[in-house]
Length: 194
Length: 173
Image 1 (cartoon, rainbow over the protein chains, first blue to last red):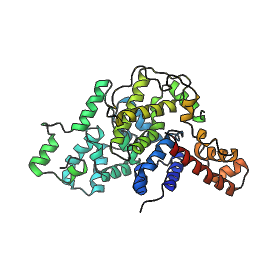
Image 2 (image 1 turned 120 degrees about the vertical axis):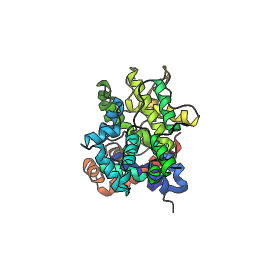
Image 3 (image 1 turned 90 degrees about the horizontal axis):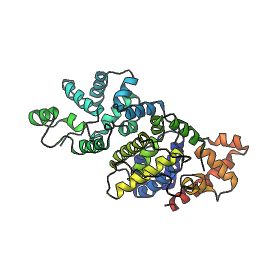
């Protein structure tokens, strides 16, 4: 049953100004048919209220992004974690077959470097990463690597996201999974499933 | 109307700390994109392009005079969302003559980005409570102590203030 839009907005606004970083999507789900009205209120409120100070993590991610680094890599480095440790955590947290560690590692490498369509990556992957990196899922989703300088790079990024993997040029992982083993759970989790 | 945090933003800007500014405003950028796109997964893509536009403007050496940086951010958000809904690319750089203050920069631009301007019809006490609650992030006990009023009075002022805020936000285009 949908909740009252006024109450949802009041709760969102209060949490936002207190730096609790509420997720608008969660509020839309609760608002049901009132989500349009709630979206209007949230948009106009955010336009008028100064945000709270950024967290140290947000600054780390933003600095990496501005420098053209992978925010995920810099955050991992700031946590003192090796890629292998994060991969092992993903395998354990997602209950994956350890024999497919190299495949998970390959996907995680692509994720760190902005080569996966993050909108297709399963939420469980984000939850596991957020847990290991001690950061919010919204940060991981927001701070994807930026393209290299220049207007042409903007177009390249969009092509990369929209057409990845490029037509006619399957990746090693795709070839492996699609032609040898078929699409499996790992492909699905990282958004490469059918 | 300007906010206390505007001065801190101006310092970050003059220090060349664009990362600090983007870190601070990212929640507003992403939040507005998700709100306007009604939760669509396109929101993060549009937010990325907004950050890219802000970064490009900064690297181009664009300066905005007395215009608070938060207004610049929100003007870029509004501009980029307009591009999105019009079916125009949101990843193209802003035009060279793009001016976030508009051709007739004035207090009206600031008012559009001011919470308190929405609450001016409220009695002064209610405005004080709302300002402390939403702009200074004080809790009810802190507000009661700061204004030397009863906690119940803070509650009542907040109730009326919130109602007014929602009404005004819904009415503004």
